[in-house]
Image (tube, rainbow, N blue to C red; front, side, top):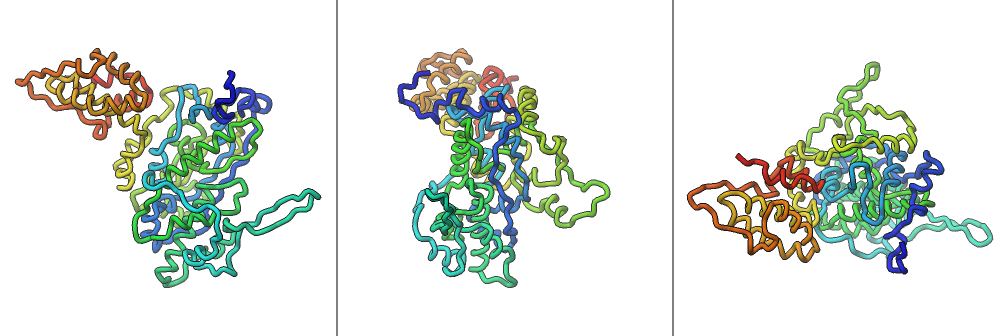
Length: 456
């Protein structure tokens, strides 16, 4: 393909430059992954502050090891051109819905835009309670031209190990400010260890503190979208053939894979194997006493059928065997009612504006083809057709109208209803949990089946 310099290498990646071409040379090659266990313990006294920051659910989750071979196999399926995984069943990707249901992070609000490079010592002292002379910054190593290594302290990243040591235990009878310091330190470690990890793995930027100043009000910031954007960027960069290391929210990617694909998915067990002593702490975590997010499902005790260190080639063979019936397109539906209220409140933000407009158009078309509801359907279509045109989704709308055997022009759709017939309009998309509706909206197939669903 001749791009004539119009597209960057990240947007168009020839096969010879993609990671998959290297897999043919060495099927078991794997990426080095950067993901750490959170060492600062969760304390119930921090719950109000963590809830306001939007990190309560992820802070309650137990630790899970990241499978580098599974991550490597998924990277080899990733295409930067479309930000999707190319699988035998079609294309799939991670969305804000997954961020909300697996981690419970906020997915709407202000973007994380602020000062990136500044002296942070005073802010660290005020928001973490660490005096300037006791602040341990991340150390940077640089090799000079004479091969000598120069070590100097970073001006903006805190050392994660020292942060864990300082906040490993909350003092007895703590004051409110000490509770807030502990909550902010826990969130910083979560960000540096599993959400916004970098390739060094031993530091977290202090700049995130500027978004944690007011712990008395619910967060105004969209942490979930930032995590999703970083994951997309890391996947696209590491799809390049010569990349050897990947960072970012890799645990999220693994939980997404376990929830939707039959790749190394463990079996959740609620009893420890015979011969092992019962662990009261584990039992308390397994039998959750709060409304958990879907991701907490994977924090119970596990039984793994996949052999240890299975290798990237093993997962590649499993990917080749994936068929339509093995994919969980809607894994969260059955447990949605049990999830926290915040997840329900964020459900309107799960999908893009275009997908929401397509859902509304589908509902309008169903009403327009339902006896006694034609006027409602035509009105709904009028309200969303302009937005679909703006989003360049007119071809999709025309395809839907054609499949429903309706005129392509909204004004030509018949709207004369039989006034003697009392009809109950079909449920709007937000209220519809129809399997056939979900099958159509996510696979693009079966629109006619959706239109006929519920007919007497």
